[in-house]
Length: 331
Ligand SMILES: [Zn+2]
Image (cartoon, rainbow, N blue to C red):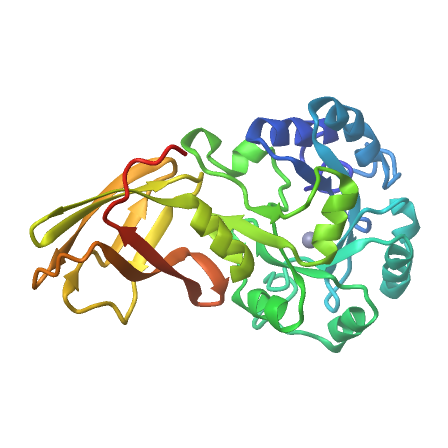
């Protein structure tokens, strides 16, 4: 996120308060090192936005990560360095000196908006400079989502090159100017699977690729993370047979809508929906109609959670296990 200490339009404490109102746990302000249009009006100290925001973050219980955006021409373009100790040390003439310094400070570094039209006007390219950064331990992650944009190629690279997936708002305006919060719209977020709510645990998770992305009611990430989320979210609440018709009630125990889509390979004797959406914390009913009555009390429906993306153009496969004796659970 940006503040007036680079090209953002808000004071640093506002970023903390916005995050608190949206229920975020962890944020990072990463003002541009090299681009500060308000340099006449604010001090040229790259640590300052963090220092101003930190007391309020502590008071509101938000983990504020210190960072900067290394803002260079393509290649290598822009990168965020998080967990910095002194952002001023990244203010160097050559970009490699800035990356070396970030590495020396133990930063988690990720490539920002690789497909940004301003720097990659026609096609999104992986330059030899990026290969060099990766090889030298100066690229740990990549933005797959930036603001309103999902980059399929970044998603592919994150898998091929073993990079941490990041989804960021990169917000410059007051958050409510870019997102319709009152109507439930939310900024993109990185879900960090940290073992504790501490900077050290968050650092460990980021360095070890334990993230997924929440973006426009979709989750993007490795199936080893999205599968347990789907399992914990989808509950079969009730199953009742009436002749050839089996009616099923599902519950979505999550804050994300779930789109369940039928895939190939289902029992041809069973007719059921092509696609259903279960709203967050809501129930839905559907029927399974048997062409020939079997009196079976268990069905394994082959589906996918089509708003959970485990790779470009690949949704999470999901077997819905419907057991007739199931009744309202105590959960
Ligand atoms: Zn940028």
